[in-house]
Length: 107
Image 1 (cartoon, rainbow, N blue to C red):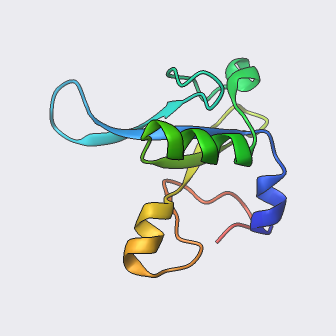
Image 2: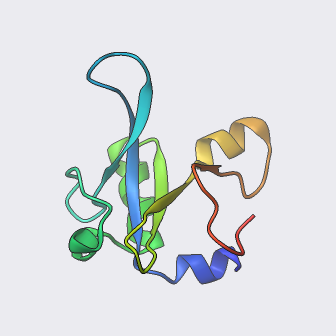
C-alpha cells in the first residue's frame, strides 16, 4: 500500500504527546482534525476523523505533534500509525513514521 493510497482514506487524526496520569510515561493522544478535541479510535468515532489534508493543516495550525491514520479490522482491533513530519525533517529520513503495529502490507 502506498502513502498516496493511505492519504485517500478519511481515517486521519491529529495527535499530541501527553504524559500519562500516573506520570510513568508519555503517550500519543488522538484529536479530531475537525474540531481539535480528543477523539476515540473505534468505529463509533469515525465521523470525527478527517482526511490527510485536513489533519495535516490542523496539526500545523494548532500545535499538535503530528498526524496519524486509524486502521480498523473486522474484530475492531485498532492500530495507529503516526506520521511525524517534524521527526522526519530533524533526522532527514523520508517517509518516517512511529508505529505501534504495522497492518498487513505496510512496512
